[in-house]
Length: 77
Image (cartoon, rainbow, N blue to C red; front, top):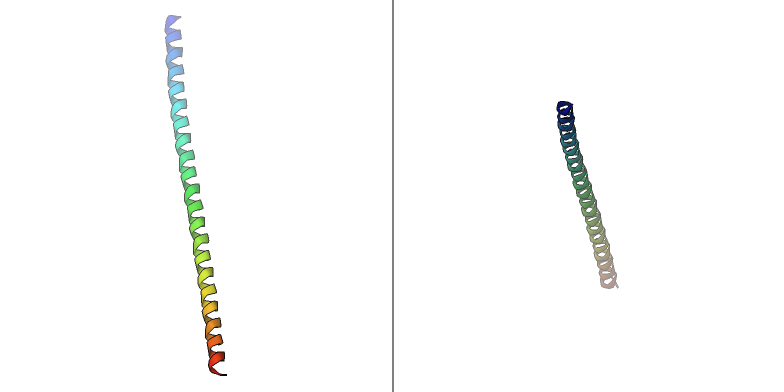
């Protein structure tokens, strides 16, 4: 009887250790997923910033072209 009780306790301890390992693995996987999502978010932010820089450059180019046309018009008077 006592031997069976000890074996049951040992099996329970092994099962608890295995459960703990599984939970640690799950936590690691969730951390990796979170890191991947953060990296994706950072990449999207960088893409938006690049698009904004490109838009600003295009606006500056358009303003410069308009200024050139204005100056040409002044010279041709």
